[in-house]
Length: 182
DNA sequence: CTCGGGATGCGT
DNA sequence: CGCATCCCGAGG
Image (tube, rainbow, N blue to C red; front, side):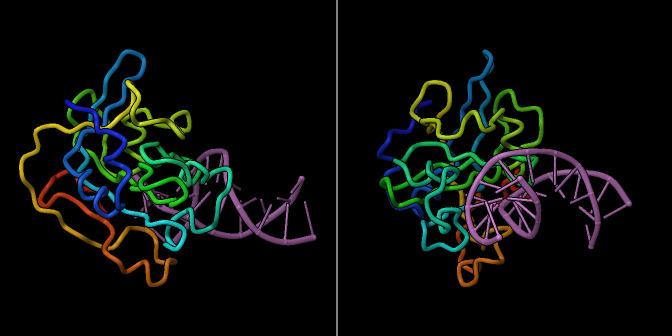
């Protein structure tokens, strides 16, 4: 499978989000390679997007989001789970795509439906914060993707984002059994 | 320093 | 609906 180049991420976030569907997230750790197919994502469109962490400005936690494309923005949520994003667009745009669900492909025994669970299953935590996704041990690759239909829905868990909460910035593969619940 | 809350998930 | 569990970010 072919690793996605930097220029894949250096594009409009809506495009990157939808094109990430069907791609493969690969993480090699302690000699084990884990692979999951990306089946559900959410787009976060920068500081003006009230649901995006970057809407609160550049802080130590969110600085990766403000950095160059093709890096992992990983954060701890509710003290328990990690969530993984892919930084998109040019540095300073502070946009990203949240990976919400994977379809297990290789070495994934645990559940992968939901952003917290998939990080746990893939062995992703704060050590991967800021990691370059063009590295050899943690990256996204294109495979042979069968054609599929993309469903567009509002994002999960962001009712506070006012008008942004309604926008259909969550994308997933139609009829895929590994979409997160809720 | 304290303190409130969160892009979650699971059990009741 | 409540709770686990902890870092961040704002304010004193």
